Structure formats: structure tokens, C-alpha cells
Image (cartoon, rainbow, N blue to C red; front, top):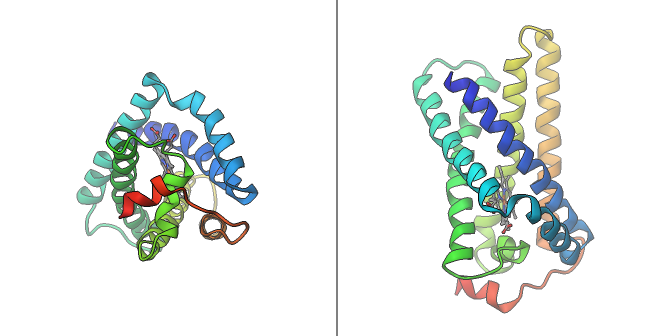
Length: 203
Ligand code: HEM
């Protein structure tokens, strides 16, 4: 039963995350395009109902995920089964930090938590040494988790060698996607200058 709810909740978080990551790809066209996409996307999730469901699902996902890791400790074998636990643990760490930071930015620092807020750390010495790997591994962990879930859910319908290949392709797509985003956030495809009110949060 808990597994079923974990999957339903993953689908809801996954639907948001799909558009969230597409939103981040807009950084390749510049900060203004990113902000415009987010302003439109916010019409869908920045309301009490959707946001409460989303944040409840995130909390549930973290708690149920930690329970699964603990419950199956010592029983996992093979790369993908172990990777599922490790990526899940990293996602739990990321979710707790990411959501706390967004809520802090909005309700305590009273900032518009747009992309400037998300990536100010990339452009403030020495915080890039934390934030670049932090976000890079978050996106990679998401794809690794997806690949492990795919590998498990298709175990009765796809031959093992093919399943493993598909899973590695999913991980490779994740690494490429994550690298592209990080380069974009670093300003490799176009200069990014962080407004003072956002860099001030690191002073
Ligand atoms: C790739 C780097 C990422 C950056 C720079 C980033 C940045 C942001 C920003 C700026 C917000 C605030 C949005 C708003 O104010 O409307 C946000 C919210 C959020 N992000 Fe991310 N994010 C990243 C990756 C992810 C990933 C990988 C996930 C999921 C696994 C995720 C899940 C969420 C969630 C659940 C919210 C809360 C939405 C809300 O209630 O406002 N983010 N992120």
C-alpha cells in the first residue's frame, strides 16, 4: 500500500518537476525568458490548493522513501538497486534543503524566489563550490531514481539486458541534461548578473 502511495506521489511531484526543469532550460535563452516562463507556470502551482498538495507530497515522499531505505537495508544487490537507495537519499536531502530555502526566501527574506534567488550562490564566491555539485547531483539523482524505477517496474515485460541498457541511457540523458543546465546557470551561454538584493542573502 505504501509503495502504491509512493508511486502516486512520485507522479504528482514528477509532473511539477517536468515543467520545473523545462522552465530551467529556458536559461539557455537568457534570464528574462526564464522569468517569463516561471511567471506563467506559477499560475498553475502558486495557489493554496496545488502548492499544499505538492508540498505535502514532497514531505510524504521523503518520509516514505527513508522508510523504504531503512526497511530494505542490506538486501539490495546490483548497481541499479543500490543506486535507487543512494539517489533516493540524496533527493530526500535535496528536497528538505530546497523547499526550506524557497520558503525562507519567500516568507522570511521577502524576496521573489525567481531564478536569481535559485542561482545567486553560483555567482557568489565561494558558494559555487557548494551549489554547483548540489544542483548537478539533484538532477542526476532524479534521473538515476527514474532509471531504477523503470528497471524494477518493467521487470516482467522487458528482457533484463535490454532493461539495463535503457536504464543506463536514462542516466546518461540525466547527466547530459544536468550538465547543460549547470553551464547555463553559470552564465556560459549568456552573461548573468545577479541583482544586489539576491547576492546580499550570502553576505
Ligand atoms: C536544477 C536546479 C534547480 C534550480 C535552480 C531550482 C530553483 C527553484 C526555484 C527558484 C524555486 C522557486 C519557484 C517559485 O518561487 O515559484 C524552486 C521551487 C521548487 N523546486 Fe526547484 N530548482 C532546481 C531543481 C529542482 C529539482 C531537481 C526538483 C525536484 C526533484 C525541484 C523541486 C522544486 C519544488 C518541489 C519547488 C517548490 C515549488 C513551490 O511550492 O513554490 N527543483 N526551485
